[in-house]
Length: 303
Image: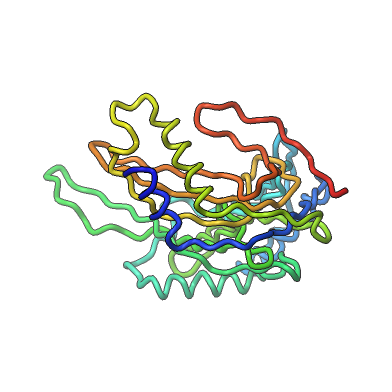
């Protein structure tokens, strides 16, 4: 696919505002993160009708872990404040008796989300919305290669945080893993809390410029390939703009807009790539492009 067609297809359904607010992200101390995790443990125990009050707390280099009764476990990552509570179910325990319709699985997830009161974790300018559902299945075959019907092991519902009208892109903001019978397997949260008012309003580059930068990154990534990018069977799957979450293991001080583009390349070995480019002229978050070292982070403050 040549560059012009690539840009046209990637930008076909994307619109962007002229300016976007930049927010500082609230930073939590280890003690504050421990209290936040205790809160999630408490509501999880209440929902599961189990006592999870007693905990053996272990502080590690990058996280604090709580070992809970009946094999349950919880953890909070110091850098990001990301939380996770696991109720202690084994991988192949509490399977679904039969395949369930997607609508029923989504209803289970939404019901558990309401009991966990996940909406209480976001502020007035923020929101959480159900985004998608995954299903984890297991299958097997006998020595004669006769396969059995796949067994539904878990359903995972993902929620997306938004700040104002923009989604926070990255991993699922909230992920709820459901076992058979509607039992809760685990809940995880990766939420970024804006700290106060916007520190500035930044001009946004157009989707076409972002798509061109993504094409250039793809060219750089494929530089050693026998075929040039223009001859690859590349399919532009999506281009989204939103605030970027850099992951649970990284400390992040600002919420800034970025474009995230997904590309699929067909061939003897199918390949899929995700590229991220800044949506503003000014760089707020350090990004590592293909073949480069991650730049040092820069802290921007309002004048």
